[in-house]
Amino acid sequence: MVSYKELGLVNTREMFAKAIKGGYAIPAFNFNNMEQLQAIIKASAETKSPVILQVSKGARNYANQTLLRYMAQGAVEYAKELGWEHPQICLHLDHGDSFELCKSCVDFGFSSVMIDASSLPYEENIALTKKVVEYAHKYDVTVEAELGVLAGVEDEVSSAVSHYTKPEEVVDFATRTGCDSLAISIGTSHGAYKFTPEQCTRDPKTGKLVPPPLAFDVLDAIMEQLPGFPIVLHGSSSVPQEYVDMINKYGGKLPDAVGIPEEQLRKAAKSAVCKINIDSDSRLAFTAAVRKVFAEKPGEFDPRKYCGPARDLMEELYKHKIINVLGSNGHAE
Ligand code: G3H
Ligand code: 13P
Ligand code: ZN
Image (cartoon, rainbow, N blue to C red; front, side):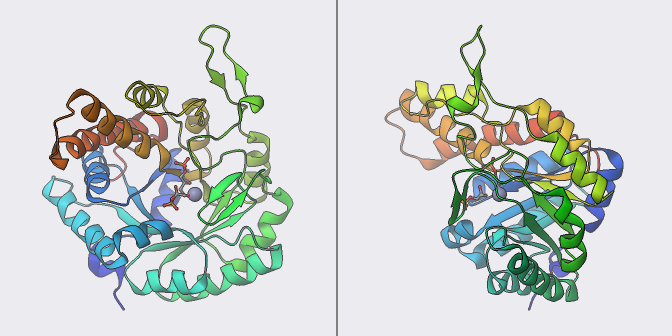
């Protein structure tokens, strides 16, 4: 058993309380490799932004859970080396799908876990979430739960359509489970294809797809039911056109990829939405940079020569999100 406190990590409790009060959101960036982690920590340290490092079940399988945990511990030291005196870094399990997985992360030094039982019937979601909360809280680890279903793929769970969170269920759910934050469904979804072309309109000037707005009325109704309760948005990548264009220009094929417009995320960040999850945008930045090097320098075979530019582009992306979208800069001096 390792406590996250020994690793210099923090849970989400104080982060979220401050974010709601301050009208900004904490970035939750997924990482699977060293370059992503370096870029996240550099961006957070330079902007003095609290940050949540997210590890999915897939990331644990890809990178090895022991290694990931030591990487997160190393990240705290790296942040200090970069001059961030009091780093506020949370290590969070993204989309945990069982009690055993959540327990293993709590025991292993994670400071926060998500139990995503949103695909189960309501009462089963409550029972499993409550069980995780009871265990995690013994170690002061915070728990994110989910109510409602996002369209797209949530690890092994996939759904063709989204089912918005029902505002009339949230008080009962939060009270009976004791969860610390609630991921809701208001029209976001995972991946780089968040809406079909049929769900969008086309900008007559540019011909680009314009996605439908998020269901802010549902968010408002949830906030009315649970005043001041921390709300989480998954599937919040914006799928920047410049990266999609770069990928397509250099041999990739991502037709009609579309994400959540930044102005909608800016609006959400000012509300009780205090954690915004971003993974796909980082994947796009990485891929765009690597494809560019491969296309322009076909003789290059030193991974540092293409992973380095990928890291730089991801760092730029993370800083942009922190400063221009979530507004979390300067909140972890
Ligand atoms: O919510 C999903 C995250 O983007 C993690 O994706 O399960 O492919 O690691 P992954
Ligand atoms: P995106 O696919 O929109 O980046 O969402 C990531 C996410 O929700 C991770 O849990
Ligand atoms: Zn997610």
